[in-house]
Length: 106
Length: 123
Image (tube, rainbow over all chains, first blue to last red; front, side):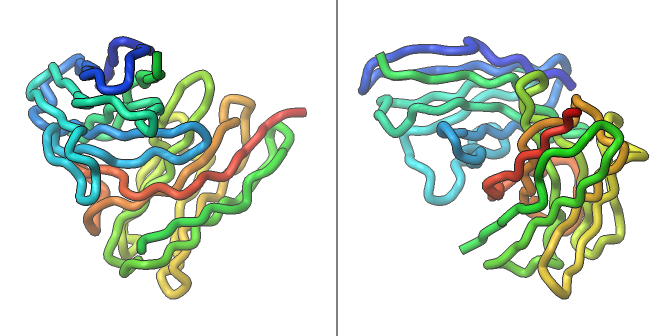
């Protein structure tokens, strides 16, 4: 299954609402996870099953969608949110990732 | 706290071999499936291999099947990836990652990830 994220990069101001989309090339129900990768660090799970926020993750991160179209939102961008964000489908094996969206501060 | 620490990466010539290790702590290792995921400039994040909690099931990406072997030593809480016949396209940062259940399968996710170990295949 191919996962396509958009945009590939974005620049926003502190406090802005930021939305990233992820599209699958076939129906994956809600088997969609989101990760944050800060510069020089390993990916970190933020959202699983499309909308479930991982324990300990800030409530300003949220996810939605089902089927083929999904979105990830940061409600109030903070400097520590500078990172690349990836979606990953777990509906079919092997698991596959989107190409990533780099988020920068304007 | 769950921790994963990879080691064993390095520079190797095409056709060579390397063995990666991932030391786990902070959870019951034998209860969790584990995966290897690599990150390369060309292909981004790519799942490579997985193994069930008891070692009773191993799985590979098509790109590495027949060249890589995943294994684990549950008595030492350690995951391994033996890589043979390495190619330039295997160059990348290799992460081990924990899965939420005993078996590798659909509906899973990777949490947490280790810090990664760099593999460079070049002459």
